[in-house]
Length: 120
Image (cartoon, rainbow, N blue to C red; front, side, top):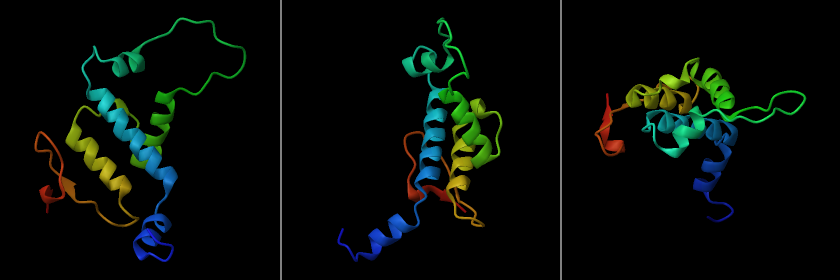
């Protein structure tokens, strides 16, 4: 991209990087929730570790941050119910949509999502 490129200008001026990171975190959380129980990320998320806790305020856990992001962006308290991929994806699409816009619903065809699968 060149310095005066309108595409680059549009991409980077309209991008809210903090919201994008939060949405991507929620996407990854949905993947983990839908994983099989024997997968390592799922074991780490659901596992309990037996250590002595340091003195002071408890550290913020990844699951706590996901809970806060889900409440802030989606208005959802129970983010662990992301087993339904289509509903979760639709909620994330609405969170990504500009203020006042309605995000179109995308269907899952079993292997991938493409722009041609929007349902009106």
